Length: 269
Image (cartoon, rainbow, N blue to C red; front, top):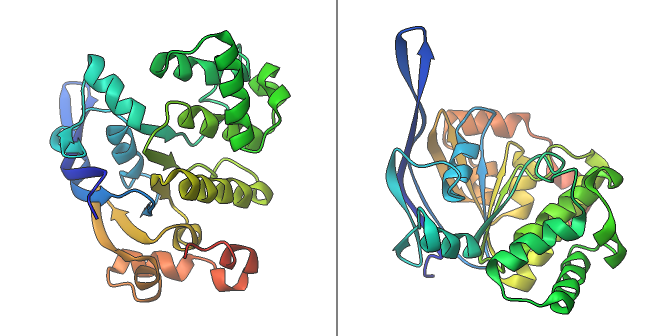
């Protein structure tokens, strides 16, 4: 398969300052992988492992210290029209749905803004597209007039997903999209992402600390530890036959997903 998005030897170093002393922090070191359409790759690691920094670099919210990100073989744009074209194709869903939505603006405003940025639409077309986006994430059209504080956590995350879909991306970066939500509604959001992937033929990078959901919602798992990918492979191989010591500890601590039939029935084919 031809890669939609390729990450090649990505590094990110931050500088920590204590008085006059400067200490380098190597958050991401030599990370390489590919995302292809119609597939989900999970990037798994504990807090501070560097996985969210990888996501932010792919979304062009952080500049890599070195390395390259390519979309269809073309280096990711850094500014101007090149960056706008890249962001048309690569979108991100953030961890905290409330923080990612402006509380002073309506749902319609949040969805209309990326539509107007990437498409030429008149007022009637804009209303129709907002209603269509809400329908795609299983929300009623009349939610367009609501503010974020009037929605539940799960509803806010559905709006955030709809906003990410607005430009018509081919690659979706989902950074811990259910970690801030109640356990009872997490499965619904993950099932929504799985359905959208099938319908839109999306390439998805699913970032999480949870091996159980990574196994059941992705075909491939990469395990990250202290800024490096220490293991990767098909989901079952990584979970059932881990090689890296850190992966073994993660697998031992993870709940057994075979005991949860709701997860098992939604596993990718």
